[in-house]
Length: 222
Ligand code: ADE
Image 1 (spheres, rainbow, N blue to C red):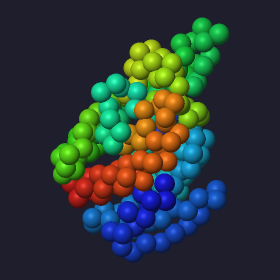
Image 2 (cartoon, protein in one colour; image 1 turned 135 degrees about the horizontal axis):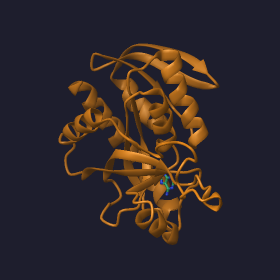
Image 3 (cartoon, protein in one colour; image 1 turned 90 degrees about the vertical axis):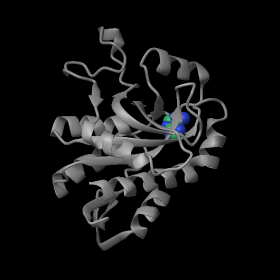
């Protein structure tokens, strides 16, 4: 999101910008770490293109993906944060062919584990964020904004998701195929229920600022 990029740019030096596929990629240094920032846009295809471009054009050695999500776990509050233990595409459905929903036919795994070192660094960085609950969890992604309690129930009980969004698993899928470590960091902007469209607009800026603060703290630890 723009607000996340603005926050990160505040601390970044030696910035240069280039466009690929209509998206801006900004290189520079933040906390003495060379980084590339880009805005993926919404949905799994846009996120996949961004991840693939970071890997192919910039040879990044890891990918941190930040943003907001809808909470699925009943104990998660708006404002809490999830560091991905893994990601899965919840809308991939070839069940009529006998493949369980959420699995990629003919591919050995469909739940992509996040890099354990990046997860640990994110958890350590999170201790600097006062008054926010941050924990690890499974991130589900699909090309749908979820605002339906019955879907929340399904995604939580059947696919064991802690939060739902629209990009993380696509990034994870690309990183898995390219052997690049990744982690997804999501702030809860809503509960994916009937109030989600309103909550999303109300809380998303605060949530986004927290995600970018966490990434900046992580870079200080790398
Ligand atoms: N991102 C933030 N909230 C979401 C929701 N409820 N569904 C999908 N993506 C989201």
